[in-house]
Image (cartoon, one colour):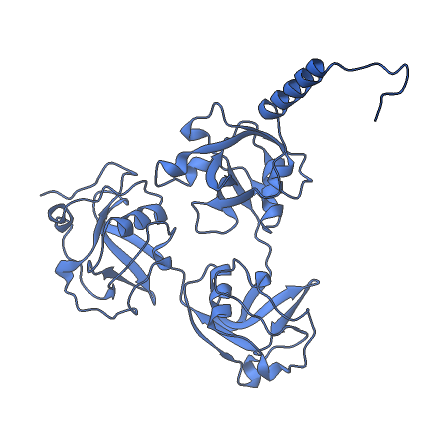
Length: 362
């Protein structure tokens, strides 16, 4: 199409220069990342607390805390479905376990607090950030699921909160995979039982909110699982679901000179016991150090491990197998609790770098 008469012409070389300058400004100044980017909180046993990491071009990395404030945390909490922002802890509290996890991707995040995702905020690619400047986030987890009518927080009738009111979940479509998600969401141990509330004493009251719940077992919360619309079912309260989880998974290192070295013990049914070293290796050591926030595994020799001595009492775990990427030993495979073919001379011992290695006196 020809240019209108009298309208000024823009030389092509000037246009090319303008495009080049705009491109440079976009690439070097504050940017808005696309919706394909992602965010997560890592390094904590709680879903809504941890070191902030983002994904860019298929790689995860930390966020520099330059300019990081409660408004930025509020956006992270909103994006993750984690309720209100509660604090801006330093990311170094949630220690990375490898050099790869220390990589920074963005800095100078500047949110107004109303964005839906962190990547709608102004930010820059990292050009100057130290290892001790990782950003952290602490959110208030909204209570949306509970186990009621049991002997503790980790067993009881499954109830979910909708429109400010608690209601039950129908057995239709329910399986142990759904129970697994509930136990994880509540910070309990593994799901060990799910059943109908078979008597009046354990039945719920009020609305029956969910039915045909179908979790894969990998979801963060029950609300992430497919189900029928809220309140749309023909169930009765004798079909309410009951779930029992193990107690929260706890472990410790004993027999050393500090809490980051020693013989490994795990807590089960209120009783501490040891772990057999069948199949145990560097990846399993790495997970233990990560869970205890004790830095990296030093993976000592068998001779050094033996210096912590054998345990006594119950041997709880055997044939533990981890990938090394887990944040808790609970996520690793193992035999059933208490099943083993070991003696206490095979008890696992671990030394981490979080403090000076605490070997007992020879």
